[in-house]
Length: 345
Image (cartoon, rainbow, N blue to C red; front, side, top):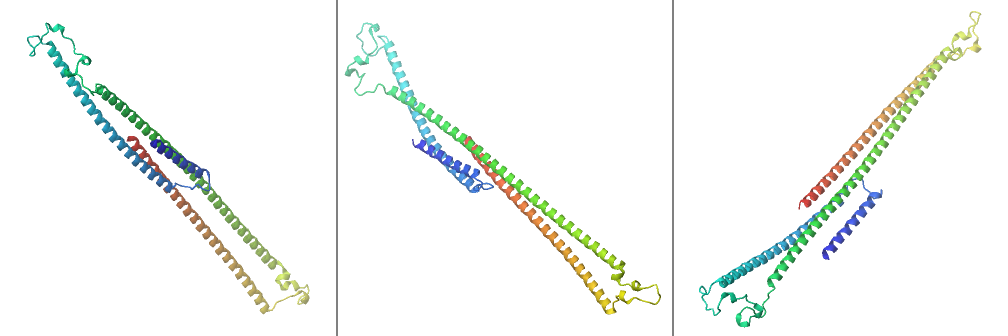
């Protein structure tokens, strides 16, 4: 009954652990991507303790079996000795009964040896010393029956032990299969997570590249439009007689006459001021172009840094995943070796 209670408690504890593990696997908030190192260590310690208990129990059973074997050997030796003594006694009796009258040492008042009959112990009196009070005539049969019962009990114990060992091996194999399935599910979940993460990173990279290309195209179109506007402005300034204030616009058909109302000439100081303003405007435009170029270079540098960081992060994640996979494989290999050693025992 005690052994059955222990097995029942073990089964209940195992079912509770499996239930908790299933809850963690099916609940995304509680499931951790990777191996449960603490749980694996606890399982290893529990298996080692169970192996020690099983070894102690096997040693105890071996001692009991050895004692039973010694007892059976003693019983068989006693039976063999008794059979030899019985055979010697019968041999002596037959030898004595087969002697002739002349060969016997004791006096015989019988007329012929044919009148002798086998001794009936139950009919003999006390003085014949053939039967005694308290004598156990069924001793040898009882010992033989006890030996047979012990032999049967030992065989039954060995059968039960083999059945328990087989059940333990089956349970260990089932547990190993369950852990392998759990590891496979974890690996698939990690693979799917890494694939989704890589997909998102690729989409982010494509989006950033598209935004960068769009910004570059917009900047190029703006520069091209500005250049066209500058060219148009320069062309209109050069070709317009009013804006360029050429003296030819005031020329008349009459020589040496000028229309003052059509002439808007500038003094040297005013012309120099206009030239300086144009130079300042050109410098500002050049500074703006330089600033835009530096901004583009800085943006490209930031994008490069971002890509490097993403690459390093992906490398570290892959390295961590590989390390966890190796740890899980090592744990499964060690569990398989332990199960194999227990099966050999």
